[in-house]
Image 1 (tube, one colour):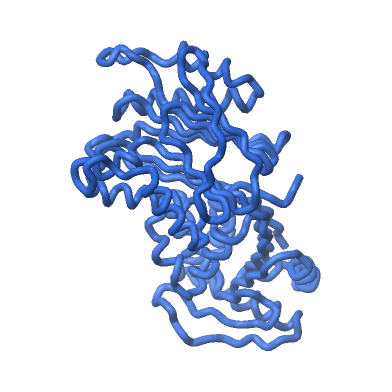
Image 2 (image 1 turned 90 degrees about the vertical axis):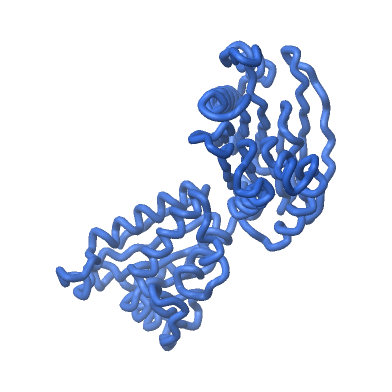
Length: 391
C-alpha cells in the first residue's frame, strides 16, 4: 500500500419544487484490493421517478463493479433492469463511473453525463477518451495514471445547464466551469468544499430556483497526513507518562484538548503552559500554547463545537465560512482534522472531571465519551482513518 489516498466529497441540490433529488452518488471501497468505485447517476427527468432510476443505476453498477464484473455486463444489466418511462417510452439513467485502483490508476467511464473535468498541477488536463458501444449505448472510457494533487470533477447536467434563460443564454459552458474550478482549487480546499462551491455557484446562476437536479462529486488524490488528538487525563494517574509517551511518539501534528490534559502535557514536555485570555468568539473558550504542541484548546465545549461543524460538513457544509477562516480553538481543530488530516489517532482519558459532576452543568462523563464516539464516526464518514485509544 502506498502513502496516497483519495479525498472524496459531493453535494446535490434538488430541482426547484421537488422533494427528492434525481441524482444519486454511490461509493464503494474495497480494502482487500485497495480500490474505490464512485458512481454518479442522473435519472431521467426529476422527482420520485428520477430518484428511483438514479439510485437503482448507481447501486447496481457500483455493486457489480466491486465484485469484479466487466463493464459490458454492468451496462447490459442496467438496460434490462430499469423500468420504462410511460411518458417518454425510454428507460435510462446517465452515469459516470470513477474507479480508483491503489490510488495510482483511475478508470473513468462516462455515459451521457457532462465530461468529467480533470485538473493536474492546478490546470485543466485533457486526458484521452476512447469511444465504445455497449448494448447500443455510446460509452466513453479512459484510463489515467495518477499523480499527487490530481483533481476529478464529476457532475450531472444540472451544472452546465445552470443559468439557462437567466444568467446565460445557453447555460454555463464547460470551459467556464473549468476556469471556475481552477480558481477555487488554488485555495487548497478539500474535495467536499470544492464540490460545495461548484454547486452553490450553480444555485446562484439558477437564481436559487434550480431548473434541474444539480450534483457535483470531487475527488482529490493526496498524500496521507497523520494527526493526533489528546483529550482528557487517564483514569489512573500512573498512566500519565505512558499516555504522553504514546501520544508524542506518533508521527504528525499534535492537538491537546482540556485544561488538566494540557497541564499534564506541559509538565511531561518540561515547557510552560501559556494561556490566552483572548476570546475569538463568545461560545468557544480561548486557546493556549505549549512549545512542542501544535494546538492547545479547552476540552468538552470546544470538541462539542467541532462535532457540530462535522455534522454540518457532512450535510450541506453551510458552516464552512465560520470554521474555515476563524482563529478560535474549534475552527482551528476543524481545519486540521477536516482539511489536513487523513489518519487521526485519538488518545482519550477516562478520568472523571470533578468540575463536571455539578448536577446544574450539562456536561458529564458520558457526554464526553459520546462526543468522542460521534466525532470519530463523522470523521470516518468523511473518509478518514480513525483509531481511538482509551486510558
